[in-house]
Amino acid sequence: MSDPIRFDTSLPQLVASLKAAYHGDLAAAEPIVIRDFEGRLGVILDIPAVDLDGLNSAVAARLGPYARPEDPVRGRNSAGISRIVEEAHAAPVLEIEGMNIRLLDRRIVGADWMARPVLEPGSVPRIAFVSIKGGVGRSTALSIAATHLAQAGLRVLTVDLDLEAPGLGATLLKPEELPTYGVVDWLVENGISGIDGTFRADCIGKSSLLDGISVVPAFGSQTLAHPADALAKIARASLEDMREGTPLPLRYQLQEMLNSFEATGDYDVVLIDGRAGLHETTAAPVLGLGAKVLLFGINEPQTFQGYAFLLAHIRERIPGGTEWEENAWFVQAKADSGDAEIAQERFNDLWSTEEGPLIQPEKLGPDDLDLVWVDSDTPTPLSQDPVPLLRILNDERYRSFNPVENRVQLDKLLVRSTFGALLDWLDEQMDLAK
Image (cartoon, rainbow, N blue to C red; front, side):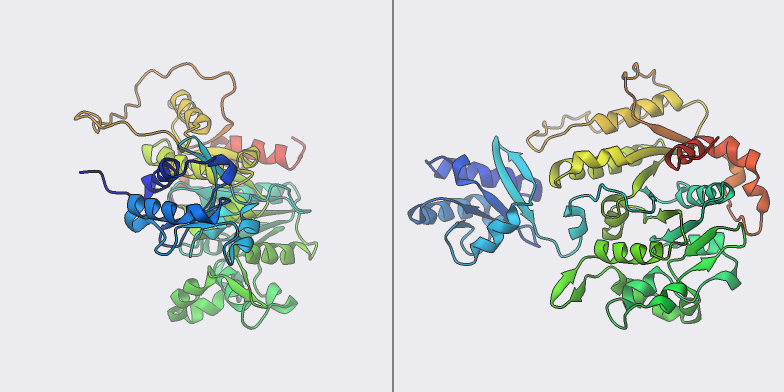
């Protein structure tokens, strides 16, 4: 009995079925594969119509439920195909079973993860703070970065895109400083009642921690006054808007929002707090906002597993993915003083991983699941060009971060002792004098 087709094997099985059933030059047929919302596959080939029936039968038999229900194989001259062929020009090229294909990956959610990265910075520098897991001190580091840059005389705008676990508003603003609206309100209202200068101003809170720090929280005082509406607004905030019949993805809505704030001329730098994990709302700060990206993680297996998923997707599934790496830096959070060498090696291994889609997994043996994670293992020598890694030390004095109530946590010497590598990086990126 053959193994059933699963999501991970469906693409190779599709290509294998085409190779077996088509006796012409499959590469010359320029396969365009469409994966629908549910994961079913279809393919468009530049072949004679007479060959389609046999290929349809072969693909349907091989893929079973993973084949498009009606005509999984269509020719370039079939009705309605020209639009798809045109769209495929921007699709990534994958090598599957030795065959190059273009993949159009249809999604109900997660479409922003398929977009080409925005690599060119705007007129105002943007820095995105993102992480695979929560609880790594990402928002704390952003707040420290904001105060450091403000102390250097820069006008800093911080924006909370962690819509489901917001924190910047409460961290950087006193309750009376919270603005009326926040990011969630912007994303709801921009598709209904519209945005004007008054609404924009009502989304910005001025922090009394330091002159020069402004905050766009996830939620404003209006939501706090009507807390039962919060989840209803979150449910709508990440949806596409419709503009004159054309869908407007979340990344474009967030670009519009940031552009609107920056157009006031009031800010020298924008710091963006992204959501933890690989949710749709994380795609924009990682790929779609033209930001320098700080990838936070602690020296634990789940960090490297999660970032392996992210980096493999960016490298293999989206055009321009490898170029994006020039705009990304790893940040080892909550770092211990004694793990610098082995942590550097693990981040090096993650960054240099080049796992292609053709690699077939070996059969697991009885001992293969006995994973041993030993921090005392002797690390192998570092590569000549280690991946840039910023280290933020594990400091109990920042476990409960509340600078509004505890200004000692913003003491320059204390901050420098824990966040020194991050501060130096910020100075370099913003061309600040030492």
